[in-house]
Length: 64
Image (cartoon, rainbow, N blue to C red; front, side, top):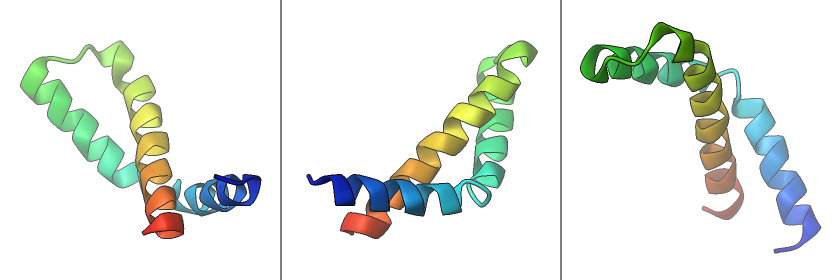
């Protein structure tokens, strides 16, 4: 994997950060209902899932 592949993947992921926040919020609320996720982990889990989903979409857009 070259450095250009990494840069393009991150560019695609940065663009998708805004759009991936809604699925992350929905998944976090589902985890709170289903497994009793503490309220103090809400922001951290939304942020982590948003970045994870954006990276997945960025990788797909680059290599898919």
